[in-house]
Amino acid sequence: MRAPDDTEIKAGQTLLSVEGVSLSFGGVKAIRNVSFDIKKGEIRAIIGPNGAGKTSMLNQITFKGVKRKKMRPHDAATGGIARTFQNVALFKSMTTLDNIMAGRTLRMNKNLFWQLLRFGPAEREEIEHRRKVEEIIDFLEIQHIRRVPVGRLPYGLQKRVELGRALAMEPELLLLDEPMAGMNLEEKEDMCRYVIDVNNHYGTTIALIEHDMGVVMDLANRVVVLDYGQKIADGTPDEVKANKAVIDAYLGVAH
Amino acid sequence: MFYREAGQFKTTYRGDMTVFPILQDRIGIIVILVVAFSIPLFSSNFMLHAIMIPFLIFALAAIGLNILTGYTGLLSLGTGGFMGVGAYACYKLATVFPEVHILIWVVVSGFASAAVGILFGLPSLRIKGFYLAVATLASQFFLSWCFIRIPWLVNYNVSNAIEVPRRTLFGVHVTGPEATPQARYLVVLTIVVVMTWLASNLVRGRIGRMWMAVRDMDIAAELMGIKLLNTKLLAFAVSSFYCGVAGAMLVFLYYGSAEATAFSINQSFAVLSMVIIGGLGSLLGSFMGAALIFMLPIMLPQLMAAMGLPIQSATAEHISFMIIGALIVFFLIVEPHGLARLWQIAKQKLRVWPYPY
Image 1 (cartoon, rainbow over the protein chains, first blue to last red):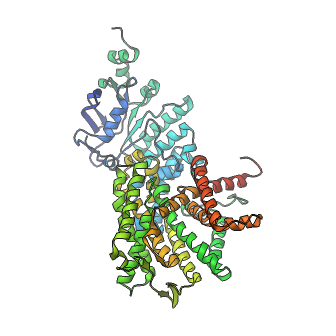
Image 2 (image 1 turned 30 degrees about the vertical axis):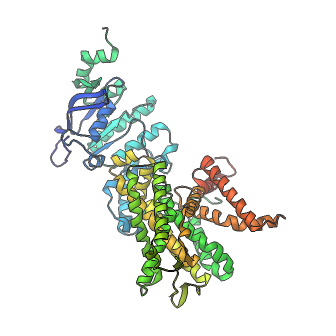
Image 3 (image 1 turned 45 degrees about the vertical axis):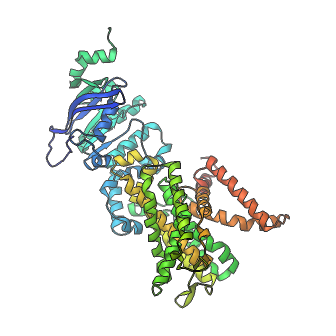
């Protein structure tokens, strides 16, 4: 994996490339020699039937690279990668505000001494970041749940808060693992709008794993399809839709 | 509460982020502080010495453990040991450098405790929950052993105990046999108030959020760039610092002299039960838990006497043990967030009263 670096990479150039990644759990080969790239500024979807290795793939992107054999989670975060999780991984007992503020941890640097006093530099820093967080809260329209512990929120809103937390990191690459899972139509539409807005407004590159084909085909610029851990197609939504291997994988094929 | 936030709008983030955003709460805390500082004027020596001083000291220890267990989610049974490190460090420092003021050493001894805390916190990256509790239990036994077996710690006293030297502040005795409960109480109160204020700043800021993030979902925290080991070790350090200062105060401002048994495993369990009953992850809860555990054995005989059932003090002690045990079981099952959460619920109910919500 090449660490993203915003000074060099322009829109349309490769932001991240995955080359020949394999992953096995014991004898189960979850991913077999998969390669693809993500270009800056695009929405890239990774799809595939259940158990195709999509989430494993995403975990690989975040956790391990090819060029750097072991990419530590911390390095991924400093390198500008943020992600959301398939089963929401929010800080349940913290409020929405604190969750999103926690997303800005890396960008805050006042030390223990000032934190203890919470005065002067530490307070200014807190206010400055609070302003950024409020922008994100406005952007995602979650003002009304600012002070609610996220554990008490409905699922759809939790997903939105999680997106907010990832956005607070001001990432260059945003990995979304099934952002629409378990949502009703209305919530899905909202989420789609936010994903597109994030892409347009912040210029964030997005890698998306999703089961809802309608959503994927509408949102993504390019789609990579996995099946049994192997890449079977890669291209624009229209190309992928017409691909024989993809249709077979989804609909099954007579043997 | 009987009052609401209605009409109290904030126009700055600074105003919105204060500890007590509601005016009535601010007045309330000022009243509490004024009462606390003026208690020596109208209360008995017994009240100060037997209730208020140990209550405040244990509240501080409970805050220390709460930072570790409540905020960061790391269970520790080594509190007694860490308090002991503070006490012994304070004694060593005060006897080796008698010219430096004792109260400075009381606070500085926290650093010794913090260092020991970091050392025993190192396994916390790898082990969690029960297993970490056992690791900290080992630290408790190891430290207890050190207190008993290393005579250097008590300057080779024959009694094998810490003997608190006489020291004064502004010409008034604050430690040693001549110190009045009033003087000691005011010193303890000042230290506890300042350290509570610092702790509340800490848990509301970046570091507090890092701790809670690690507690709630460590994988997500790691992916947001929070280094787990550093965060956990910082929690151990700060927590042990608080416990160390509490331990030093316990010996120098309350007991007057102490043997190694003062910092046994029982002390760890006492503080842990305060945190559980008071409320995990709440500074207010630390005070409530300490108050309950301390008030109970003292109030119980008087309460029973008032009801026409005078009991002996030994019986009262046994009964209070049973009540505390039952309370711990009750809180663990019914309300893991303890008295502090019950207080919040009560406030919320009163706020919307007479409507259910």
